[in-house]
Length: 218
Image (cartoon, rainbow, N blue to C red; front, side):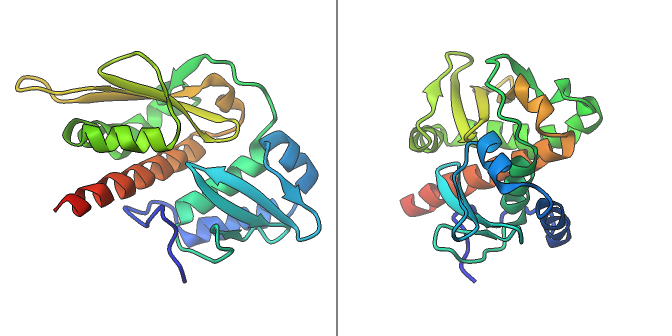
């Protein structure tokens, strides 16, 4: 079974969650999901095509099976669950361009410490130690400069899901800090667990890219 480029690093979400969401997915109308998520659906072969962080994926309807760009199975359940949750819950609303933190989502404060450890601290550490690799990663996503902190970008995870990353470098006195912001419209799309899945998808992708570049240098 071929691995996705979003490799299985620090997996957080399981095959059982994927199966549960596939069962929910079959009850949703594919045409409505396609319109709300801005993802093409081909009724002839019963497949969605969706881009996530520059990677192409296919989703079969009604089975909910998520395949990579080669039409093959792979075993990164975070990305599979994220794709299914987004297709099921996207509502087609326009971006607000009002940016909020994880804490500002319903139940965000309850889960923030875990999100901070798994995502924000990881992003800050990678960005502080490998800023050039981080810049190359963001260039690959065609991210736009956001003009905050020492490094920052606005970018698209998938159509309808916009993110801002902000990094402040550390020094001898202070550790590096970071912030991850989400368009406010996503409060109507994702619950706090969905947002945690999105965080995993982001960090797996970032780790895979930056560590791969680092290993090529050695």
